[in-house]
Image (cartoon, rainbow over the protein chains, first blue to last red):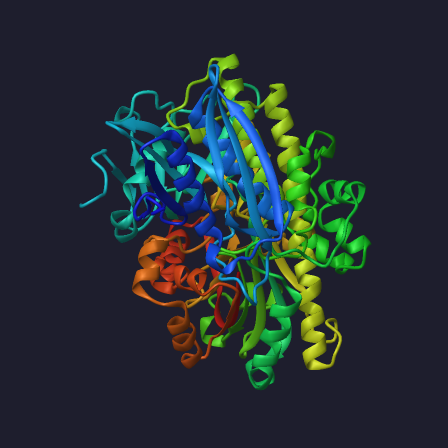
Length: 144
Length: 483
């Protein structure tokens, strides 16, 4: 698929801001995740080998996305890895949104991977997930 | 005067500007910005908005302050300083930042440029090898959970006990490199897992390790410089800029969440989600303070382990011990921290976010070593322009809760910097100008180009003229390691 996100220029001088969008909440989760992975390393240069299955739920999709992106940042440091991909599905279970994701990557290797920023945190600065017309959008600022 | 705000900004002096209470509903104190007129005009709109948001927080005393290196941050602006009464005021992770106790240290040597220049390539390669940098890097120190707990409570003292440093290093650190009231029992497992393998690592972004030169003509106060071990004559020094790594980042994230809920319970509203806070005396406020101190101590330990590695690298390259090379620590300062300090108003929780403590010679908190000079302040510029050594003043204690600037401050976004210059091209240009750069990420290198930062000399001049710190020496880069 063509990822729909773009990095923002002027809202976080010292850090990284991006806006991701999709026709569904699930798609915006995918695009925001891809933007985060690309902020840390070029996924095309990362092999597989390391994998974690992650499942989370929340009634608030905005809180769920924030927690999921924060979880990705956590594993970067806790396991010392960068990521190739993160296939995910998002479904409704009663009132709640259920996220099932696989985080796939490899231990950091400065010789073969194109590394980018060491993301410290996903921030609440200007953070917003909203539906506009038929489209879902999220704005995220990463502290780097 | 053309400013990036519609707010009224009154000139108090040529270096102090005040936004009155009338400019935003809910302001409890005026906001003050320290800057020359030129720097003030270049400040982004976020600074004015954020410093006046801070002025609305419960229990704030006197002023919400922003230093001349100020720019848009999260909650507080970078360069923000604010003090809250310990009885009725708040503590906010947004006033400390994600990188708790991100700070700088300066190490002197007896070496000169003539000694180092022929070996610079080997020295930088050895430093790059011994000090891991960049995304996901882990250090050589392997810790059990229990031992990591001792790092959290003992900070740099733990390092010295384990042989990563000299006992006399400790007196040359803010708080002796070990802040009391750190409680590892309430740190989350997530924070421990993020940080346990990262001791002795640099990180990325604006973090760096730099080999620098001090020339006679760039020493502004020779007496103070000499007292701090800075003798000039093309003397080689080393600066390190980094913090508490993933451990501190996770502590900040954990408590922003806790405070969002706590605010509802305490009936606190804030102008920006990133200003989430809790009363300092509340259980949540006290827990954050104790956990933040764990992260602050880990940052002191991180810079101490890096210092040990730097000393070993120099010893290997120059064939002499670090002691024989005169590699004494000049000082270590925190740039992102909240501390309880006593001022005219009584005990206050002083938040410094991208700002430095700057106690003057009269401060009883300083060890004997700095009672004549005042506390050393180390301010990092861009990797192309170098850094400054300054000292705190008694006027800073009176006017700015003993605080001053911390660095140059950005003026250009990371994306724009990358569009303007390529990492490989910048590395080449810097080499031609005599600065050897080793970087993990070429895009990260481009983001940190000198053109993305304010002119540090102008920033330093403004705090010098305002009297809240005094210039001692400029440190010019010849080698840089970036994540």
